Image (cartoon, rainbow, N blue to C red; front, side, top):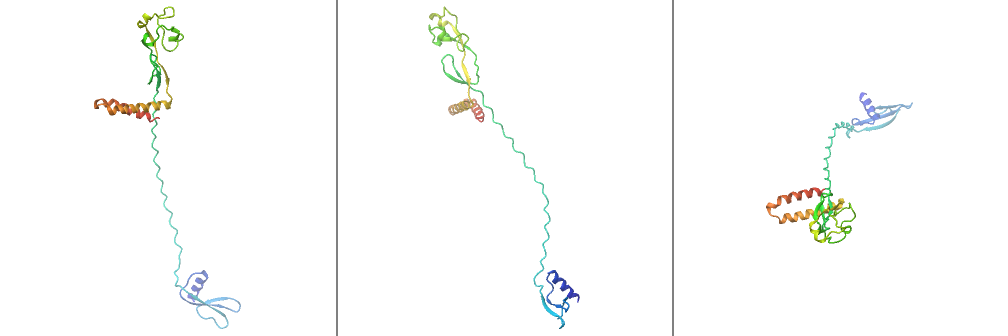
Length: 211
């Protein structure tokens, strides 16, 4: 009888039971009785076949929560080396012959030159020097507004080259031209003459990083 109760409980729970036959007996007043023997003749009988060939499937245990691993801090970004500033460069016009040249000094010192190299001859001084206190040459001693031709070679006048600062684009262009010229000289130079040229080449390459 205990086995029958176990069978009934397993059947009601929807779980497989041991192999065998069970009987559901319905009495005259509608009560259902489960037993392992056939029902009496006065009761309605329903045969139940129990099968335990299928394995009982048990729910898999929930996986243990993974241990939380602290994320390693990312390394700080490497500092970016700042670009070197461009050097200040100037284009200057010579006061004696009008030729242009590059310089790192935008305010060159005045210098004396013989008045004769200016090609003034006996021109009026206003045409040679411009108005008083203007840029360029300063007038020598006057002889009624003119210089006697015989005394031109004996006079020296103060002159000053005029300069303006290069734009960044002009500076980069000038540095590249200087580097090309330096590399050409370096290829042709004797070994004893190469160290200063190599130093200048390195300086120019460093300055060009700012372009």
